[in-house]
Image (cartoon, rainbow, N blue to C red; front, top):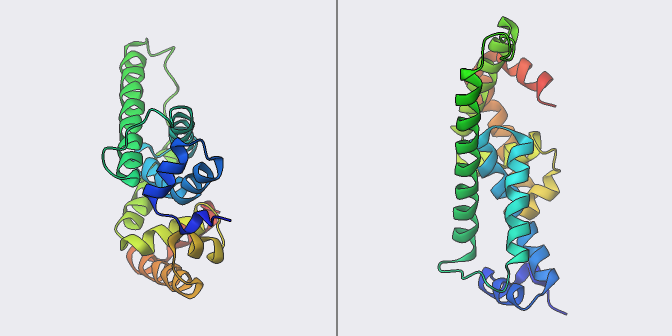
Amino acid sequence: MTRYNTLSDSELTDLLEADDRLAFAEIYDRYFSLLYLHAFNRVRDKEEAKDVVQELFAFLWANRQSIEFKTNLSNYLYTATRNRILNVIGRKQIHERYRLKLPAEIAAPAVTDHLARERQLTEIINKEIQALPPKMRVAFEMSRKYHMTYKEIAGKLDITEQSVRSHVKNALKVLRVKLGIIIFLFFILFNQ
C-alpha cells in the first residue's frame, strides 16, 4: 500500500490528475495550514482566510485533470492563494468605497475608543509575532491560534516535538521582552 505522506509533490500531482482521492487528501493535509497562515497574514480575518484556502482546494479537485502545474505544486498553491487574496482585497476596497459614499446616518456606527485601542494592541502583537524567525513563528501560531498539539505541529512541520516545544517557549520569551508584561497578559487572556 502506498504511503502518501512519503510521496513527493510531483508524484502526488500525477496521482491527483488520475483522480486519486488519497493523493488529494495528502496535498490538503500537507498545505492547508501553511496556506491558511499565508492567507490570514494578508486578510486578517480567520473565516475569510479559511474560505480562500477552502475555495482553492475545491477548485483544485474540480479541475484536477486540466490544471497545468508549470512550476511545482507549492508554487502553484501559493500563487493561487495570493491571487485569491488579491481578489478578496479588491472586493473589500470596492465595498469600502461604496460604504464611504453612504450618508452618515446609514453608515456603521463609529468604533468606540475601547475597540480602537484593542485593535491597535492586536496590530502591535501581530507585528511582533510576524517578526519572529519563520519556523518559530509558524510553530507558535499553530500552537496558539489554531490550538494544535505539539505532536500535530511536529508532524506538519516535519520536526521533533521537542523542537516545537522549544520554538513555542522561545517565542513566548521573545514576546514577553518585546511587548512587556501588560501587553503579554492581555495577549494570553484574549487570544485563547
